[in-house]
Image (tube, rainbow, N blue to C red; front, side, top):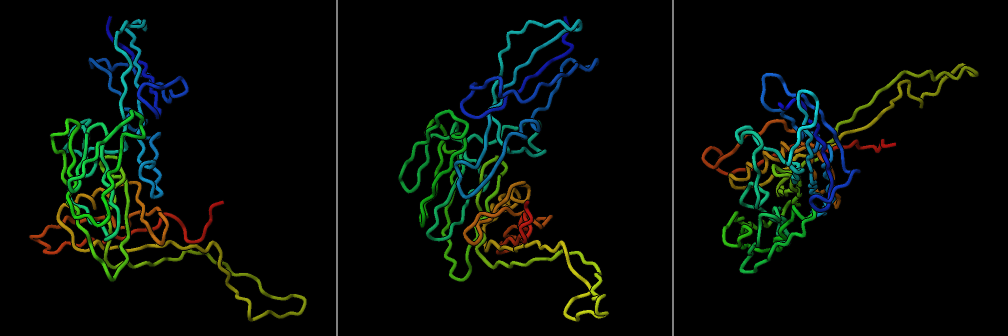
Length: 330
């Protein structure tokens, strides 16, 4: 009685693990075994990702989306008869993160701090945010003050954000669930910027969490215009004349795309990882003139910088606002 075919039901939902119903079944996948192989491989990541949405309006806890995925498999033999199996449905927690080639197949991402860099730069008087995986973190300590991390099991509790107090210069020490193993220490640097207005950039990072970086130095905003035109007939046939105040050429479909160039100011080398993940993110926002606006990195190349080659490290990034200047949403 050899395995010949499988039917896989995928349940994708929010809430608590295994709280799914028939309405949560999003896919039914049928796959036959290739004759020279002993198993059947099915990739579900891209299917699940369709149901992970990220929208950010400066509200962190409701922005990082995680979902539960329950996989139920039915097995059939060469006669297409069901094969009795004792295997129960398996449930996974899905993030909109990614592994790198060097990590190999199906890498396990961080179960503690959901951020690669170990230094954050904050404008004076500003509260910072550090994303963590609640299941893997027991507590964090800032300047001797200890905060326990709790998790009620709901999918919206799995990614949480540590509030870094305004004006603190204390390290943030993050401990694993056993409360004794340090999983990450984050250095906090307060930046006094008297000349320019710092601009916050937020993005979905390598781990599927919202991460912030600040651009402290010079910003330059510009826009480019697109349009079409046609030659029109301006003759007044009744009087056999035309008005010179009317143009012979007329524009239509006029719009513009706005771009902005931002500079981080001088930062440490580990800032390279944050800039790299921002470039690779499909969801990037900047806090600009009191609003959270979606942007797209216009720069398509990035050079890793280090203190040996570059002495003082500043990152300059071009962004395009992800919308037209004139509102054409109908």
